[in-house]
Image 1: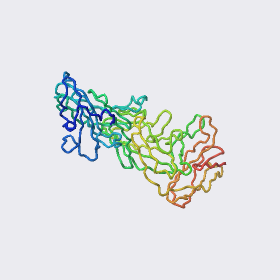
Image 2: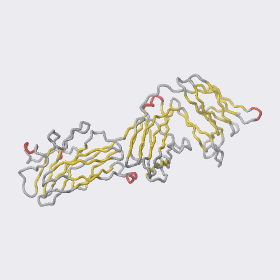
Image 3: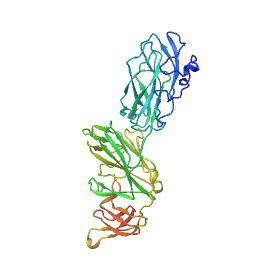
Image 4: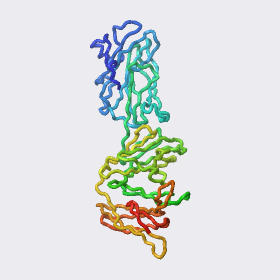
Length: 446
């Protein structure tokens, strides 16, 4: 609520006794025709409009000076508004009440009249994303009977559908000082917590993140020249880092309408949806190409990736980032439905007590009796807990438009207990002379 000085100033015609008059009485001693009015609301126990809910704002609404035209038709004027929630407590998709002071500044009694109130999104006004904001529908509020010069309060139940700044609008006249703003915070979800929207027909649930040293993915970038070949790629954490695999499920609660992100053709489409992360960027198409359609892989042309969710269907969406091990608890993922706000924050909020640690103790190439060569790698878990090791192989080939290191068709995966050592093999079915073992990037030659 704007604390403009004009909203706090009472008419010079007001006396101490008139300041305590009920809301529905207008001040005496006014000249005929046009009169100056002021009032001050209270939340005492005798006030039938008072709201004793301790979780709501304890602030009281103030009323600025206003004038009455005794010759005019019944005319409602919105004087001021008070959001009935503590500052900072309104978040994405929340519903809340706003107390609104309305005066009759006309000369005849208001007997049966309603006023519409709505919210207008303010952030990104100069951005093309502004055109995609589907602002919540306005609400009609029936006014009480108001004689000329009287004022009273009404309540409007409103909703925000984006994080950021909003203004309260109305189809009635407003006081010159009227300017009510509402700030919506992101909705923060810890693992296991959900957020549902009856309007959007979806329910989003934060799931426990996974922590990995490396992950396989399927790619067709295992070929040479213009020919694509299927291969097993590997995305791995940096030195002293771990891959945080953020996961959240999206349920389409509609029985008839499809739901989706990106450029897919669906009934309820969020084409500009984005995901971002703290501490480090999420893995993108520059890092890997994956056949798993629920993996979020941003690119220069698509900020989210294409995911279609049919009526009644649930999909788990995944985003991956590599972060320092000591900062895992600070890693979070944010989702914006329209690309210009931080609507949902998925929090990791946990420390990792122990992680496996994999070291390469030996690597060789074997090529007995002219058979297909094999890469042999011996890996030891030097960490304090069991874990899954994933590795891959590459061969070297000069390629003008792609990396000179090309993935081999197969990778390796094995579980190792603390202190355990295993020798794993990858068939080098492609390539000629130079090979490389991932994630250690150790080069071998035949």
